[in-house]
Length: 389
Image (cartoon, helix red, strand yellow):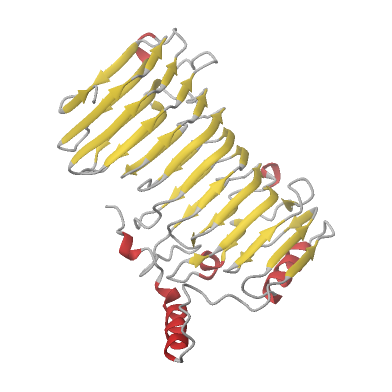
């Protein structure tokens, strides 16, 4: 079930609200909202020497900083320890090419950069972190299990970042901490990941891990994800998410796998060549949306193609509404363009609408172009499809 708006303010931020109330009571007459900003924000430089001392140097700069400061990383950097990102700070390089952080051979870190709440295994969430103009190289050839960027944060931003050669997922947003500690009393909402390039990940390019139903209302937009080991975008929870303007290609499994859709928008994405692993008995999706009931979702203006020859095995659904968790699922599927190979016979389906174990599914399906697939549209029992108004 979708998290309500009333639970979006993490409990750890109550201290700031109380401080604001105290100032008002003291007669200042100015209401402060959220954290009280520092009097003077500073630029803190973290200069690397491309040695195993670099992780310590970066962490030292972070630990010496204050809330509101900007930590500027100058590379190249060799990383042999997880760097803990403190709250209320900006982390950036002067350019992606000039601030390259590479994992050292055999370090096998769980993460290269990680939210402090993930590292410290606390029950609350990190907040107000901005990351930009960095390149993180997981050095997949000489390491295993590493996620270059691990986020467990609220109201944060990731811009203009390149993630390459991740041994595991490229970027992971996790409600669980490093030892599996769950969040209590706070949620992970209101963040944006934009203008990133993720390539050659061993796992998913972008992954949400959320058994707690806490990671809602994010935006993933204007980005490129190439050559993922599993799915390009794999969301355990897509409630309130907007996934838009992505170019996803060279995908071994699903291009966009959005579970628990609830007021979710999937729009204007360009997908090519998904399901490349071609396992027998497996169905691969260009776009998959598993819906929750009693709220609407939109899948709008996406372009889903297969340019390469289909693998010898596997089935391929270009756009699928694939089951309802509870209530009546409601989805508008509008203006999408699908182009198959024309060689898959019964193995390619353009549009697939299935209610799964849910009671009912209502789909408005209009203005979609579907060509060169064996089955243009498949509609399961208990599904009502209309052209809308």
